[in-house]
Image 1 (cartoon, one colour):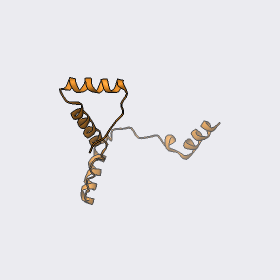
Image 2 (cartoon, rainbow, N blue to C red; image 1 turned 90 degrees about the horizontal axis):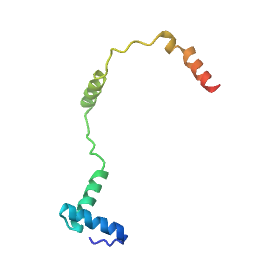
Image 3 (cartoon, rainbow, N blue to C red; image 1 turned 90 degrees about the vertical axis):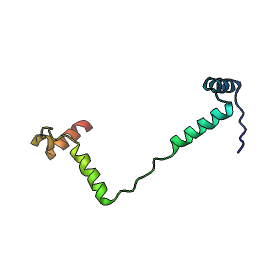
Image 4 (cartoon, rainbow, N blue to C red; image 1 turned 120 degrees about the vertical axis):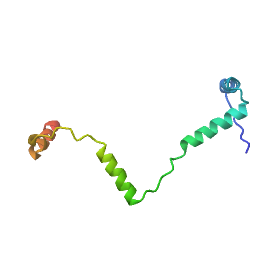
Length: 91
């Protein structure tokens, strides 16, 4: 495929300089840049897991969290406390 681009003189100068710095022709640099951009824009391949594998991943994820956190006080999780904080923020 052949593509024609109209570049500004500044862009053309930068492109030539970058190609020379990498020891590539302008065409090679453009092809490599396009390939890199296309590869980066492709979504990661999705892996289909069985229900057993999904369950194992979830259990491993859950176990990776620390259970050493102190429990919340009764006041912190009471209905009144939750709505009181909400009402205060609306005033």
